[in-house]
Image 1: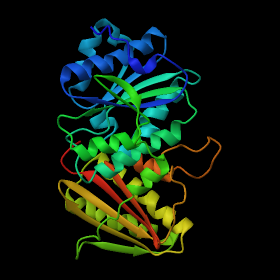
Image 2: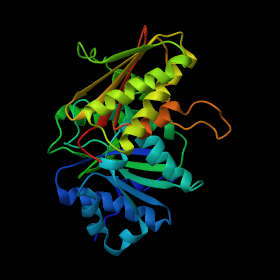
Image 3: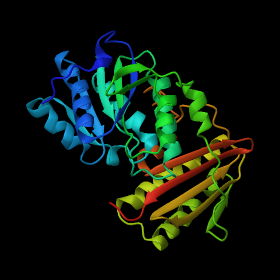
Image 4: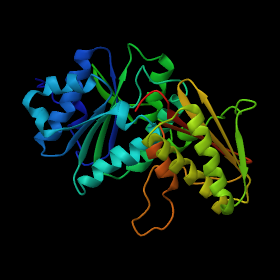
Length: 321
């Protein structure tokens, strides 16, 4: 059981902190993550651990009986799509404990993340700072420096105001404006494969044709069960936004690559809110939930804003669930 007091918690318990934990082995990982959780429990505050794979077991073992007072989630499931972590995990936990300081250990970037996922992961880490500014929260993000590339660790310094390692906690001199960092990872997406099935549409009256096109492609590529329904809902949300907020056309292309069914939508719309799809609108709002739904249902969402419009790319795993 850990008895180490977490060095980042000695002052200003109610000030938002976002800390990158740079660890080198399982013992350092478990000990320092457990120390943050123990500090939360000692203060009577709610604690959430959302890490991939066996990381949760390591932290549980280090906490011993104290683990019973902690919420655990598997980041490989809850955060499969980095775009759903802020609304579906972090803000959801904060909302469940409204008015209290929340302590979250979240590991969105690990050695198993793909290069396609990585830009969305960095944007997520940066946007945490914008979303949680002024909130009562401490968020610790572990980074395995023994397995991750040096460039990934350098990006952790850009996206976290505080850095912690075995020597203690310090301010990150490389920390950058979160919206500028997120924009820097809004990277161009390549054009769809030549010859991939495509559907062009302009207005709401054509949405049934879009859905029929999708259903045919889903069946051809072998997506099954509830995932078919979720794909249809997610892509229909995007297509509906195209018909409501742009003059069109929208161009939808579908293909399979690397074990995923990819739905790619180009339209001339401009997304001006950098937090679109990350923060739920007020309960009274009648619009503004489309991208939240998309992030919740897809296994990966990449968005690229450019001078002529927006390019969306949704991935749905063919080999799981």
